[in-house]
Image (cartoon, rainbow over all chains, first blue to last red; front, side):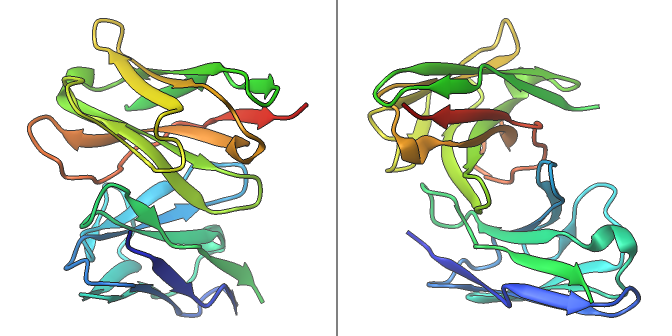
Length: 108
Length: 122
């Protein structure tokens, strides 16, 4: 099973700042990594798939990069609605599909 | 628009069974595989199971293998999860989610329902 480790656990930033979230895989997942956003009381929402492809309707301030074992989600300028928990997920080795433990982006 | 509506959650005693349903609309159900993903209170996401579009292939997390069964009725556009021998650690919000297109195993989870809560407690 591939273990995904996200860092930091919590990121405290102000609106307008840049957010950089990390996801590290225990073995290579090539480019088969996705990112999801989850707000309190809501279901997760797909942001990015296969490292760098934005899902339908996702703003351009969200971008993804990386390959192999190290991946990054960048939010170029935080909007008030971006404060949430973010999860990475790999689909290279399955079953099982696995998720990271999440990074909470909170208002500083 | 894609809609996934789960139902069937509730409080159940350890060792008992419970069945969940997910009604799908806004897309051609038979064109997609479907997942169940769960989230324990205050915790992260855990993939539970996937069923491919024609129902021929099913895959499970080790934590539920042998106890849970995923199925679908393509005539009713509905996904199911039968959960037997429930344990306290199965307590979670259970999400139905859209999976791979027919003929592929591209496990991108692109749409999620709002979830149904299962609590296993005596």
